[in-house]
Length: 129
Image 1 (cartoon, rainbow, N blue to C red):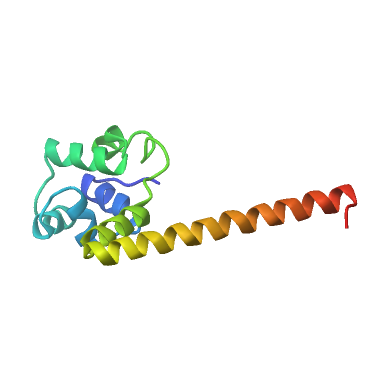
Image 2: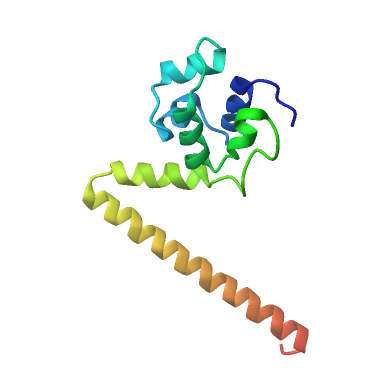
């Protein structure tokens, strides 16, 4: 993806991660107004902004500053998972405990279902009815 300006590259990172300006700038501890001014070209990002974006979202700093290389060092972070964790953190402790218990139950059911499917496939392959 050829993105010519720093502001366009920063916006491209946010869009690639599927994040709103609000969520993106919250993740790097910038005010939404300051961040919006960067995206529109009113303000220029400084070294601190590059570091924050690079560290939080695993963005290749060289790509961010110069456009050279790949956008990410590795696979982009799982932003949805981080958002889910943040939502759970905001809940009252009792409700948080209930949600976590339900998630654990669902995960257990999912593992059991996958194991039954695996066993059924193995039985089918070996001719066991």
